[in-house]
Length: 177
Image 1: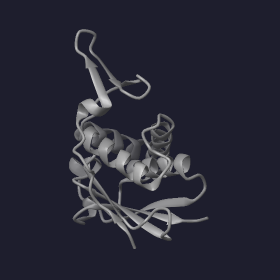
Image 2 (image 1 turned 180 degrees about the vertical axis):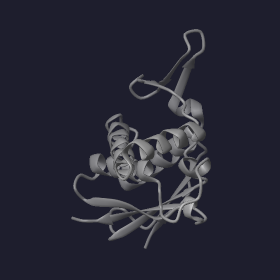
Image 3 (image 1 turned 60 degrees about the vertical axis):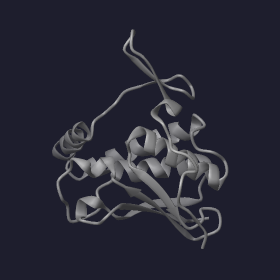
Image 4 (image 1 turned 30 degrees about the horizontal axis):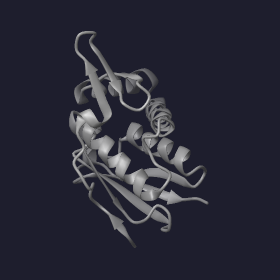
């Protein structure tokens, strides 16, 4: 089993985003699309609102939001076509965007299962404890990026979650084809 654990250089916010303070506009550097910042606490409030309004449908909505977002990231060339480029871009973007530190254990291209480890997961940062994994948006995002970069080859699911007391959030990419 191969491991690719570290980004070769540190990611900077300015590698991915540019701010026009005079206009109050933040854009990504890839397609110049406008972006905004969402705090971990604001995400928690959105998540709680979805759970309250849609009960058991809340997780599915969060997953689909993440999946659509992941597909958009990949379409904007943030995720590369090779395993190393895919992981490096995801690691750098995750770090610059404040998602946490991302590491890969295993090989996406050759192993049946590989694992993305999210250290200091922002999606768990302001959220209460739970008895099950709850990173539905994050799992959806990983699934969406995977769908675009490696079509119909993987199913993403969360094995460990900081919200249920685990040290890190861990998403498994299980090869299906």
